[in-house]
Amino acid sequence: MELEKAIMERRSIRQFTDKPVEKEKLQELLEAAIWSPTAGNIQPWVFICVTDPKMVHNIRVVSPGMLWSTSAVICICSDQQKALRAGGKGGAVLSLFDCAMAAQNILLRAFDLGLCSCVIRSFNQAAVRELLDAPEHIHPELLIILGYSDQSPKPPPRNTDILFWEAFGGEGVLK
Ligand SMILES: Cc1cc2nc3c(=O)[nH]c(=O)nc-3n(C[C@H](O)[C@H](O)[C@H](O)COP(=O)(O)O)c2cc1C
Figure 1 (cartoon, rainbow, N blue to C red):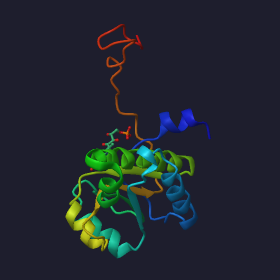
Figure 2: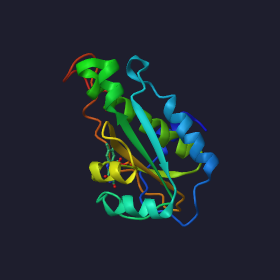
Figure 3: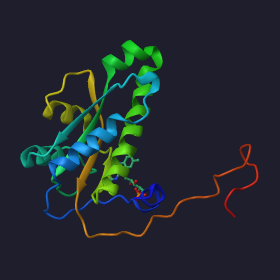
Figure 4: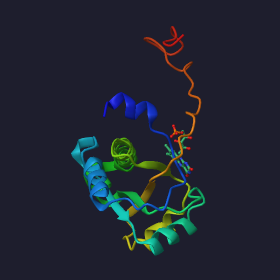
């Protein structure tokens, strides 16, 4: 698939059919995640792929931003021990950038594989950490919900008046 198509046509989809996501596809997504850019190649992240329906349900219960059920969730976590040890004082912030980069790789690869997805940040991080049996230095940062869907929502509007040549407030880019 053309990269441009994936960038322009990927949409956040929140409601899925009952068709489960194949394990092979989930493996592809996890591999895409680890090839994301990461500051200093520190890789201060952990990816936990959840497919057990009971666990997905439990995650949903503590995630106000996740309104419908799904067959697969990837929980992107920062590893704060690694982030601080290797990245020093700025390591915590860098680890968040890294997790966001990994999220984008997952979303685009998911679209490429015919899957629908949505990033969820509205969830109880402490509760999800506990549910996933993760130690305290592992911080769940983003959930990626995944599934199949027939929905094709209209693209939400994007601002273009924030694009400038050369300096802030300079000539607009898209007229
Ligand atoms: C950091 C981040 C957090 C988000 N959290 C949620 C969320 O908790 N619940 C939700 O339904 N969508 C969430 N979204 C999806 C956005 O609402 C969505 O990306 C936005 O409306 C633009 O739509 P699009 O992804 O189809 O272009 C989140 C997106 C990002 C990048």
